[in-house]
Length: 178
Image (cartoon, rainbow, N blue to C red; front, side, top):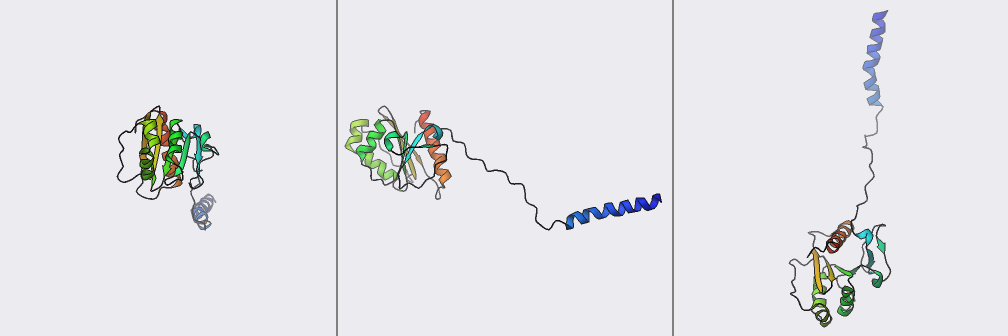
């Protein structure tokens, strides 16, 4: 009796792995982990204005404002309908101005060569980056001007642009020279 009980137990135990494997028709899926929202260091403390023609999506943690006069960071298309005098006024009020797109550098150089810029910030050395940046962020501290230039080898994603804007604002807040 004891022998037959042991045999049944071994037969049952030996069949269990086969039964459990045959019941798995669906492929195994790893448990899904929630994708984390990137943490930004400076953008959550920065009031940001984005022009209507700039197609970036800012995270909910970033304060958006409806007018450039309420912003700490003004994000414009690289070829904006903004005159140099207006840009210089924003910069003189210590608002950072970001130009996004293929013409960012060209627009910046046009502004920096303007009479309004020379009267406000002087006529410092103007250098063009090679290759031209896809994103140029300018910021003034008193009469000192700094520009931060960023390029990508491919078309940047929305996340790339937002992270880079945050990086630029961190550098500006820390007074890191360009």
